[in-house]
Structures are given as structure tokens and as C-alpha cells.
Image (cartoon, protein in one colour):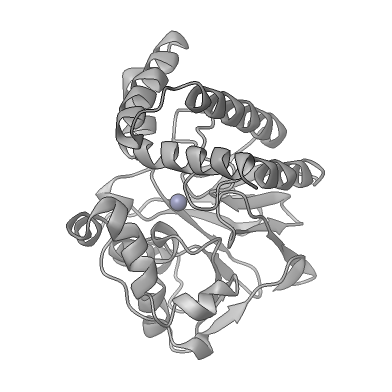
Length: 307
Ligand SMILES: [Zn+2]
């Protein structure tokens, strides 16, 4: 089975879990300290790749993991994880207590957007997680990595109200999930990710401004990988979010699906103007549901109008 693991300083491993059978789309992280932790598990179909990569590192048991949020591309494989490792428990936002033991609602929310066939084929079926294997997170909670090394959990709504990011004090890495957006390999620029129902610019910008005050060396994104220049990336994310919102605000009163097609063309043209190569443009646009982005932004604009 194919594996792609990259080791960074301070024993941080970036693991490509080949989401949708493609490389460079979803990364999980393993911090190999005296009290190690896995960050993210990925979708259900990615689970064999995760296990294969962990085995290649000589890791046969993982006792705990921390999830950034409850979207299925991040947590679809949790049921498999707690089934495989009998003593494993999962740190997650308190909504996990409600949804992970009975994941039908999470499943329906995504299959309503992508269709059930697409979901089974691409991300895979999910298994319930027993409630006694779930630990809920609190804002500013310390997770002990051993030898005085700490991972701090920050509740950071904006992309999703149940989002947490994790800051490793030793390496100054912020595992930021989907809060910043997407950076695909060879792209080096941030593309926003603003889905309904939770996207809210003010809340998201508050979060990003809080992160700008941290002592940061690296940002570790779920989609995809570990990146330098954290402050520059946060700034560029904020700029792009403003530009996207203005674009949607100025569209006529057309359906989300029509607006999504127009938005995709506009984004492609912008990347071409910036002389981004065709392969990178494909990476950035092929797996984004622009109708959903339009819906997320319009939902936010409506909230602003009718608070
Ligand atoms: Zn995601």
C-alpha cells in the first residue's frame, strides 16, 4: 500500500492519507513525543493508508487523537480508529458527544450536498464511536505531550462552530485544520473555505487575529501540509476572504448553482492572471464545491442583514 510520510523537526510527522485516492489532499499529523498524539484521522476510506503509514514508522498502537472539527473528511475514520486501538480515545468539541455515537445526522448533512453515492465512493461509510471513547475539549486546554511539552487546544469558530486548532509550544506549529482555508502542494497561496451554515467573517477574523499574536513558525493545514511564513499566509487568507465576499455580494439575484459556476470561472481567470500553472489551478479548483462556497457566503451576508 502506498505511503507518504514527511518528518519535520521535533518529531512531527505529516501523513498523506490519500483522500479520494489522490495525494496532497488531506494530511494527518503524528507528534511522536513520550506521550504521543495523532491529529485528525481523515475520511473512512483513508483509514488503511493512515494505518499503513503509522506501521511504516513502527507505530502499532495509538492511544489518543485530537480532531479539529466534525466534518466527515476529518473524522470519517474515527469509528475505525477506536475499533482498531482498544484503549484509544478521541479529543473533540463537545458536539462530538452528540454526533459521533449516532453519526446519521453528520452523514445526512454531507450526503444532501454531495449525494450518498458520491460519499460512499469517495469518503466511505462511517461507524459510530462509543461515547466512553470521546473526551470533550475546552478552550485553552493543555494536552500533555510529555517532557514538559504541551499542545494547547484553541476553540476557533468561523469555518465551523465546532472547530479547534492545536498549538505545539515546542515547535511553534499551529495545527489549524480548515480555519485558514486550503493550500495545495506547489500552490503557496491560500484559497478560502467558507461553507454553510457556520461561516462568519467577524468570528473567523477574530480567531485569525488571535492566532497572529501567537509565536508561530509553521502552520499545519489539513488540506494540505506544513507551511512556513505563517503571518503572511494568515494575511493573504484574510485578503482573499474579503475579495470572495465582495464578489458574491455584487452578483445579481441568481441561484447558488449559477453563482457557483460564475465564481469558479472568475477564480480560474484570477489564477491565470497571476500566472499560476494549469496543474496547480486544477488542484485548487477541482475538489471545491463552489455552489457550497456561494451558499456559505450568502448565508453569512443574510445573517449580517438580519442579525
Ligand atoms: Zn476539510
